Length: 104
Image 1 (spheres, rainbow, N blue to C red):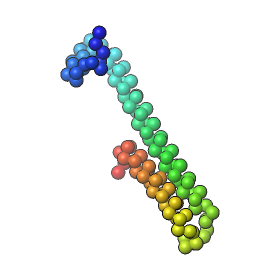
Image 2: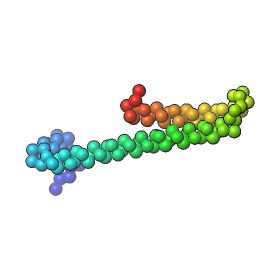
Image 3: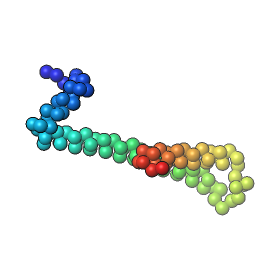
Image 4: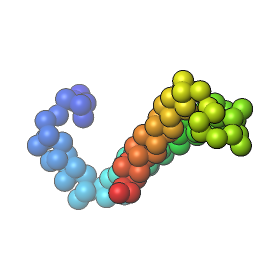
């Protein structure tokens, strides 16, 4: 017996047309399941990007916490570079999340 993976694109479309005519209920259920899978995958990608952004924001704050209330000139340059790197990683994750969710 053939498996859907064995079908060509044209054959798969033909099967879908046959299902639509004879078993619309099952086709609707299958399409709903695929839509749910896509939504779940999108949610997981979004969640990972949010977690990544939060992690880098927290690292940025922890790096600068000992220098809170001090002038920027009093912060060692290597600390500023590390903090800036974490800030940029957080912003990059935020931009990826924006792009994934259709925000300009």
